[in-house]
Length: 249
Ligand code: SF4
Image (cartoon, rainbow, N blue to C red; front, side, top):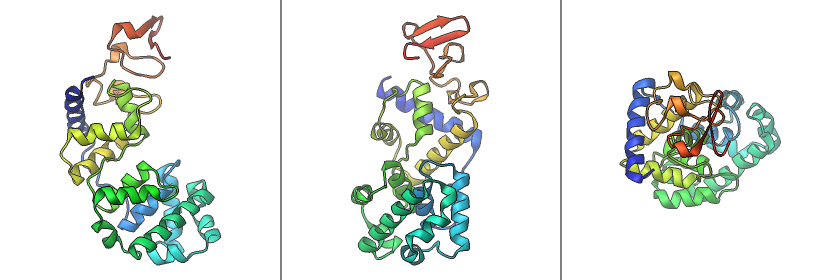
């Protein structure tokens, strides 16, 4: 699909999602520092498990910059156990805390003063911080205008023929960032709305009939029965007894 059409589709999708779900008021955290901890803990697990781990950190009195820097790794691992991969995540949290104190003396204000490209570059150098975590920190904790891409985003874009199967993180990010003004509130809202879409409708087995997006670059009557991609091009699908399959399935 041509870039202009993709941008138009992304704008239409935003309007429809906002109408469907309303403002999401993200990120679900009490402080900016809590956003960062949550962004690291949420890798490969559900938000419910992250909440349990955050509660345990709070109850132990270590959900603060200095306390998290100073807590021994073994104690931290025991506290964040509900978030899964707790040894890996302990290392990642400790890596981040070391970086945070070395570079910014543990000050979020100092960190937020850094220019976006420089800040992003430095975050990505921290072992265990990938693009999605870095961008979540930049957008939701530091108020930088950057779009966060996740698996929900790629899944619904693929199903709507807006990206191909192997699309990379930065290509998807560029699609959104070239379609809209770089506005923190808007990027905040759009990502949160996509999460609501992925949880409520665009699941592994999607609920397309009830979904607000089923008429945007999508065809209920000719989707692939396996991957649920809309097969608008007749040459790219095979008819079966129960519907269609795409050539990849
Ligand atoms: S219409 Fe179906 S494929 Fe498209 S976003 Fe909704 S649930 Fe996902």
